[in-house]
Amino acid sequence: MNVFDTHCHLDDEKFDEDREEAYLRMADAGVRRCVCVGSDLATSRRSLAFARAHEGVYAAVGVHPHEAKDAPAGYLDELTRLLDEKEAVALGEIGLDYYYDFSPRDVQKKVLAEQVDLAVKLNVPVIFHIRDAHGDMIDFFRSRKTLPGGIIHCFSGSAETAREYGKMGFYISFAGPLTFKKAPHLWEAAKAVPLDRLLVETDSPYLAPEPKRGRRNEPANVVWVLKKLAELREIPEEEMARITWENGCRVYRMDE
Ligand code: NI
Image (tube, rainbow, N blue to C red; front, top):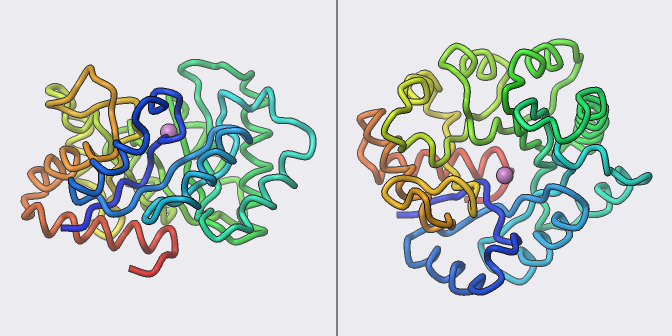
């Protein structure tokens, strides 16, 4: 079984003690690929460096809405340079986060729009982080002539919202919360997404799935998300692994 963790943060300091071991455990669990996602220029560069040195690890580079207020002048030029490297498979994570509001909303929107323009120009897929901001994000997408392809990561909305993003061509990625004991809205959403648009991820070190909940998360644990998704869709786990593997390779434009 080949499993694809389409979103993790192995560069995070929570892996400083055992990053290589986490990488080895990932392989032991059958997780053959992962994408390490940056949230500012420093974490983007770190993710890329880790990807360069590890087979099956890829990177995404971008400025997260939390960090939007600190995006330095010239950050788009730096992202352009980073995206030129072969291990950089996407622009992300970028988006809107109205739950924490760590950056003012107008700044979040500006930095989001600038990066989406860059993704369209360079023709690369995008990883979107959206928290408590689905209404504004859907309005933003509708206001644009051209959308990049990409992923709505760690999906947190309703089945109806998932369908809206689906109509726009986006892939929907589920993380640990899908396995939580009380997540009926996510279960409905997972059933609403077409099979060829489903992805699994850990978002590690955050959001460990059941039965690891409360501990530090790591890419090997994506198998628990996969298991839950297979159960919800009434598809054998190995088949769901194959489907989400193929979807991951397609959205990130990798050979299988
Ligand atoms: Ni993330």
